[in-house]
Every structure is written in C-alpha cells, then in structure tokens.
Length: 121
Image 1 (tube, rainbow, N blue to C red):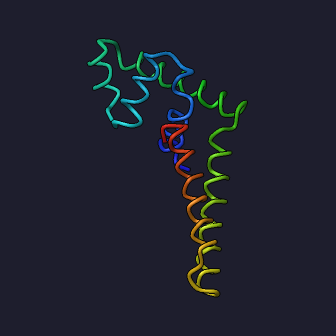
Image 2: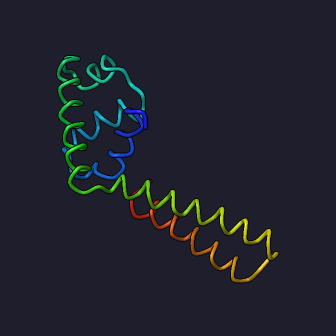
C-alpha cells in the first residue's frame, strides 16, 4: 500500500489518539493534499516545523498500528468479506436465486457497514 494511503487509513483509525494539532496537520497533508508550505503558512510556522510534526505523527500512528493492528485486521476482514461475496455469487450461479443467499449477502453487507460506521471509514 502506498505510504500516503496507508497514513490516511491510519489517521482514520487512530486520529483520536494523537494531538489535535498533529491530526489537523496530517489531515491537511495526507487527506487534503496541501503542501508543506501551504500548511506552514496556515499555521504560521516554518516548513520544518510542519515536517517535524508530520514525522512525529507518522511515528505515533505506526507505533499504534504495531501495537493494536487495527488496519491489518480491517484489511484482512474486508478481504475475507469480499471473498465471501464472490463465493455467494458463484453459489447463486449454481443453484439460482435463493432466500438464504440473499440473507447471507445482507449479513456480509452489514458487517462491511459495521466496519465503516465504527471506524469512520
């Protein structure tokens, strides 16, 4: 996974565990795609101060992920849910439309939605 995307995901999961300023600066850089200069100007600090804040924030997010593993768990579970959806599609092709298949698909969709609701993803 690309670094920028990974950090953006980590922010989704762990943003409440870093300082408000780090969260805002990281959001501006990784989610809003602002340059270091643009962020520095908005905060009235140097580009180096922004870079230092980003580096500290990245280190904290990576440390949290190493300890808690929420992103890797999310990736595994979403992948498993996608595989289940594909298997349901194959099963439906084999036996045709079925009420049980519809119920299973609804459960899988519900699990995916639960992840999104719980994590703000």
